[in-house]
Amino acid sequence: MNRSIYFILICIGCILSTSLLAQRGGLTRNPTEIGVDYTYFSDPGDQQILATLAFKRSAGFIPRFSPFITSEFLSIAGGIRSFSDQDSTDLRWRGTLYNGEFTRNILAFGLTLASFDESGLMQEDYRWAVVRIGVGKVFGDGFLNIYPQFTGSFGSGQWVLGSIDHPELGEAADRELSGQEVGFRGRVGIRFMNRILITGMYDQRILIKGPEPKFETIAANLVYRIPLKNRRNQLQIFGGWSREKTTYSGNDFEQEHTMIRAGIRFAFQRGGRKPGSGFGGDPIFD
Image (cartoon, rainbow, N blue to C red; front, side):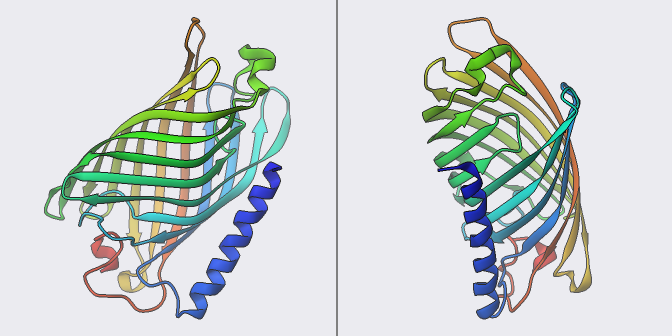
């Protein structure tokens, strides 16, 4: 299926979901986020800006005072990336049908369904289904919370590395890979005074296909949240840094890219809510 069709289908899904939720009396405990993301790819010197729309859902089993937000049901982002070397621009986008996490005691379970990403360092990073299983626990009482988590993952998808960010590979960079991926992710989230969120992550993915490319990512992010009217809405200002290293089995090829992100988002809720349930146990929305 042509990649533009994926983009159109997710857009239609977002529109239909908005209409359906409105008919049912609005979003209950399920905030909607809209905003703008800016990314600077420091190694090639490229810039990217995306407009975003996402629906969050309180799916349950989310630890109270967790620094990590609840499940994401239908999200879409679209914009342009300017290429400094080629003095040109290209359409970039990403969309997700579902991406969420559940925890029970110390067990952590995550699921990603139909995620299509053309906004990163791969020309196509399509993932049909990824399952994550591991452990995690929230420490703290609301003023300061720390949530370490470790999960292993397995999934399937389709990938094209792309010659723009992987020129050393030549024609092989535009070759389509499909099959399975395995990996693991360790991360820690810190929430301070229910306003500042700090997260650190180390992620590793291996595509089980052909040369078996391996992607290692180190990332750090900061979010500052400002409650608005009735504490039901909030403004989110965020920034982040990440570095991704790509290697291949059987040879000495290695490539690294650094990305710097910044942006602003507005999260809002409509309709009734159940007291104490909130936005993933978040007092701002309780």
